[in-house]
Length: 105
Image 1: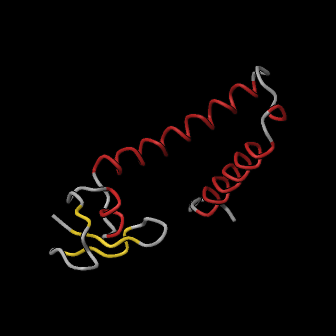
Image 2 (image 1 turned 120 degrees about the horizontal axis):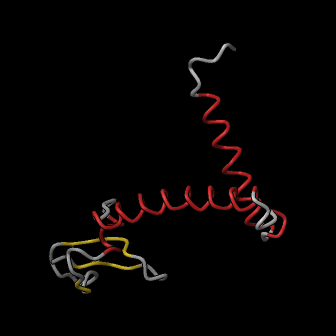
């Protein structure tokens, strides 16, 4: 079980196998903050992150569909949401145009 040193903000900045004058706080080996320090992620974190990315795309498609059917107006969304959606749409278009290997251009 590791012993850690935290900074003034409470973030783990150092981990040690043995207790010392500086490293007196004991944390479980699976502690998420410790995993973050070590550059590791748990399988659950990876699964959630992947699921989040998939769900974002579903939500984008849902917004487009509702706007196309006139159920909602894109302009009714908060300006920050509009900006994020437009940015993602532009990024997807840029990506698809750079990946189009069969284009005549």
